[in-house]
Every structure is written in C-alpha cells, then in structure tokens.
Image (tube, helix red, strand yellow):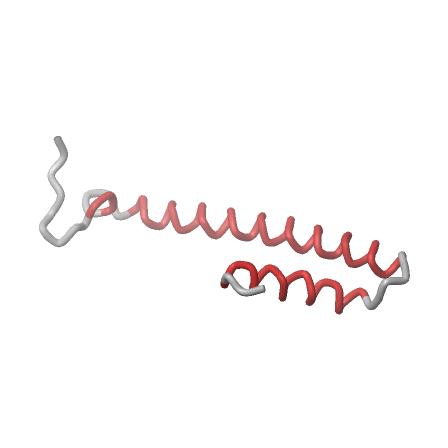
Length: 75
C-alpha cells in the first residue's frame, strides 16, 4: 500500500514531472474540444443563416447563451 503525506501530496508528490505532463494533456484536450465546438457552432450558424432564420453571429451567441443558462439550471 502506498503512503501519502499528511499534507495530501498525492500522485505528484514523488514524481512532480507527471504534473506538467497532466497539465499538457489537459490543455491539448481542451484545445481540441474547443476547436470541435467552434466548428459545430460555425456549421450550425451557417445553416441557420442559409435558411434565412437570422444572423450568423447571433445564432452562435444564442446557442452559447442557452448552453450557459442550462448549465446554471436556469431556463
């Protein structure tokens, strides 16, 4: 059984290089997912605009606004 320090150093206490690796992996993950999200929003807004339903940028903003409100538990 592995001992942890009383301070709760945990997984990086004995190998601090793993922290940088984990941070790099997280940054890469979020960068990739942000690019995918931006692509989806752009494609959806293009379709919205093509159908004559409204402005390209307003569609992207409205989708994000609704997402944030849903995450907050608001309507």
